Length: 292
Image 1 (cartoon, rainbow, N blue to C red):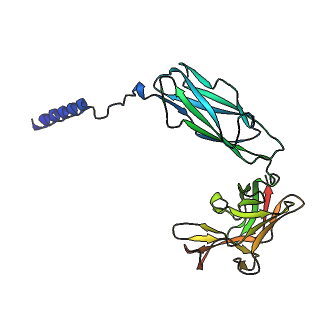
Image 2 (image 1 turned 180 degrees about the vertical axis):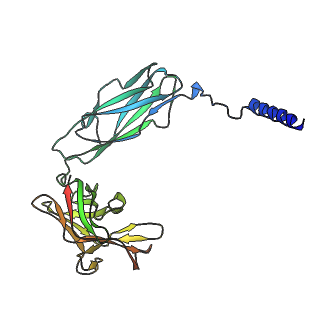
Image 3 (image 1 turned 90 degrees about the vertical axis):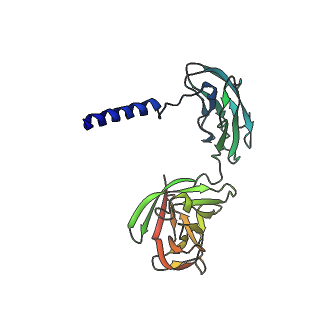
């Protein structure tokens, strides 16, 4: 008898919990519908031709509406660096689809160095709808006519780790946004030193045949350590305070950049002082950058 009573009590408790419906399915209020950019920033090359920017309505059901927008000049100017394919600057949503596209023509000023340029696309008004937070989209047009364009790009790097032997990994040589004679070299050593956080600054010779990378450049490594760029010739390590002050990458007849020294990264304290704790990495020369 006690067993049957317990089962009935349990069933009653389950019924009460079910009636509470603690996990109600949320209901979307149509008044909360809004329109916004899918992505709020784009980087494009100047020779890309066209850029397509999706604009989407967030709602349960597709909505009939019109959305107006404008292009706002920055360092890039409308009519000079870009133009609208649809000069009406209005998107028409027919109630059958949630997404329409803004199409922008990008002008290729081939042979003219302008530096990277930016402009914005701004949503102005959506008839009967709210504008979402993502109502401004920034576009950056990458100039392909940089004075160092012949050496910029991605590279396959081959070097010799003191611990791992011969290694091959990916690196790159990137422009400096503020100095046309300078660059950033990623991949002076294998992972993790082939990541952007460990890009080393270099200066490029007038004929683009040499990249000089000063020693002593410092980088945060962890919450406990920092590290600095040293040089290694296979026998000795140099910290830049003596006669050896830089690693020089020299372009050979094949177009590869080859280092006179390889890179080493000591474990330093947070003040940047090497206290003999060892090295995160020691590479042995030569280190060769082969353009992809």
